[in-house]
Image (cartoon, rainbow, N blue to C red):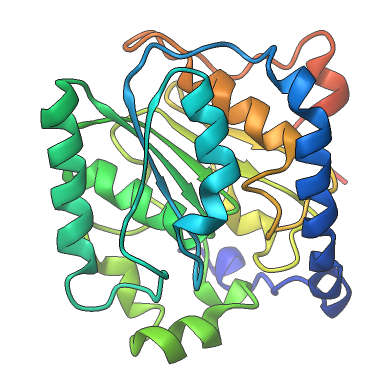
Length: 260
């Protein structure tokens, strides 16, 4: 971690208070379903969706149902509420990815929301032969846990020191996985500083997608996020290309590298 990354402050109290708009983002998702049906269909490969801190598979139901309708074999993590890397959590996730890869004889795509995205990145490092790609939604992998408004909650419910858990699974969180990786973030995230939710440097297999005006708690069902996830998952295996922001998409997805 660089010195600059270590000094990034968490989002302001105002942005944290505005997380209530996640309810309206769910309504926008429902209203946008006719347009979201235009998103590309998938090839039927398995997708594992991992929830954020304190959340369970119920939080990812809208996204999982949508992806199922696009032809994927979609699964929740099936471990109840996410209370961090407590005893057995890591082992059960590894076993689940292996089981899904064996069941479908296909590599597994991982979609992780917030803390779930940290898990997804590390699982891809542990299981590169079983993981097809990773999509993280507002996941603070490239900076200090203290650049979030959730680190105290994490330490309380997990019983772990947040910084120490960076080394769980496989290596430092900021290191990109050996598979295609998409980091989706919003500069109006009220829980995690957006600067630590994106790849510090994009590469041929790593990219950032910014969502305008989204809350952290609404990322899993924000219409623009859902479309981007479907677009990324629909790419043929072995033919991954960066997200195309040309045409109408430039109006919805701003340049993630712009200076403000």
